[in-house]
Image 1 (tube, rainbow, N blue to C red):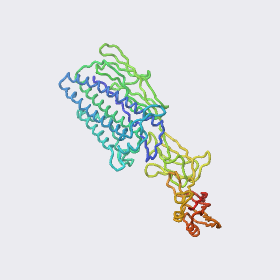
Image 2 (cartoon, rainbow, N blue to C red):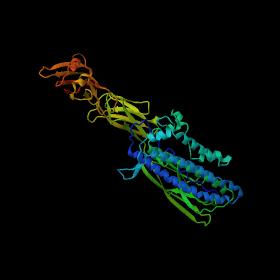
Image 3 (cartoon, helix red, strand yellow):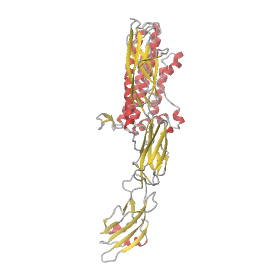
Image 4 (cartoon, helix red, strand yellow):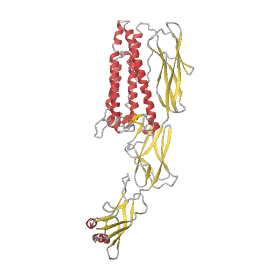
Length: 528
């Protein structure tokens, strides 16, 4: 019989992070650890595929030697492997360049664990720039990657006899979803998959692409093995391994874990082998290809394991042999992160930008609303993020809530609500002190400055009282409306002489969101 098919160890729909227009990404450490776990699992799967593919080659070549008409199938081995190796190298080179980022990236030591981690694991700039579009409007290589994956699919079909190509299409692991981005009104396939995706999230996606390429190579080699095995040669099974081919190695709580289990061998043999497969002691039915399907529902998070056992009757000795192996998969949970772009507090009178990221959920399914104290509302900013407006300061123990809902998750984050901090009154960048009389006379107004405030907000002086005190003279007061010197106050400014003192008292101003003026205190200047 033909050699059983090798595993299609695919990672389909690992997770999609829809991170929108981030200014400062704040994804939880648990989510990034999940990405790392998924990537490690894929790398192990890739190594297993390499080993399996390497082992099939000799068996195909040996079987093809038994009959001249089978030689054409052995001749297809090297071109198949060459194209797989070429595309794998191209994808890995793209990953290496993103990690290095022109010498500014690489790895650093995690101060918490002491292990190496990506220096730019949360950086979405390098992925967007290299895969989607750089700041100058030049396209990235995302669409080129898509084209190469599609071309690889076509190339693999050329190694299959024409009457069997339609059926073989189902065995090709490399898949491109070229419709969803259009329905979601995205600019392109690469924009949907890579735009504003953090580096640590993109790396497992590329590992998945490499996994797909190797799995497709394995499917092509299995096809060749089947062709030479059906040519009349009798092959003895002498090396066996239980193989699990999961549809996903990382699933969300509540989803089903599904995998195909079958016996992999370095050679085929007589079909009367009586193969039996069980998981944790429970026998599973086999299909015509000698494969068994196993599924279970995930009820909790963490790493899960199961033990698969395959037994068969050796066609050479008649002896029944059993082969057991333990497999594992990771169960995660959808999660959501809400982060303020500028501060962990909302301010009255300004637009407060926030970002919302949800692991494993499409952006169109994420709903964001506001509740709790503080009043106000939350609206999309048109750039992928959101802007929050608030009206009332929160008291101790009260918070404004940003509520996020999506299929399978519901979460919220609490923010305090404050008024814009008091600005500092200034005259020519000075809050007081000595000033030459010429410079003092040249001033036209006092103004309020919001020091160390990240928002684009402007406060206005409502009015103040100006008092000039000259030596051996009575104080001369003047009331001024607004920040600009007018009327009597302007006249007092022009009278400045050395040794005079000027008092700016009862300075009042209003900031965005204020219902009444604020008192900014006073400034004192000595004229020299």
